[in-house]
Amino acid sequence: AYDVRVGPRAIVEDRVNGFLIPEHDQQKFIIALLDLIQNDNLRQTMSNHAYARAKDFSKDRIKNQWNNILKN
Image 1 (cartoon, helix red, strand yellow):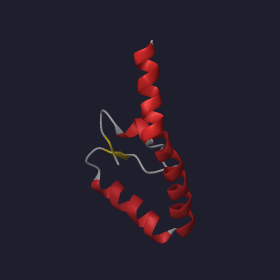
Image 2 (cartoon, one colour):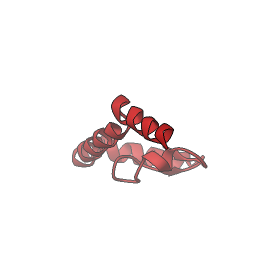
Image 3 (cartoon, one colour):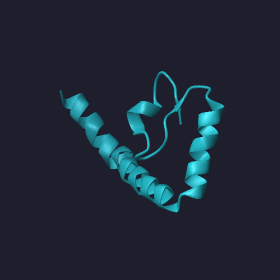
């Protein structure tokens, strides 16, 4: 993801569950994509971490967070 002012950094941990690329840096974006294409271990590891991170945004988890906010 491009590391824009708001958003990706809150979800993506660079080189753990994705890449944070400086905004508009197409060359670094291409290099990151080539890393994923050429490195099976990196791709699988990052995929596993991304899948685990996605669970933080499940319907039930978000619903519980909203319920806690509304109760307080």
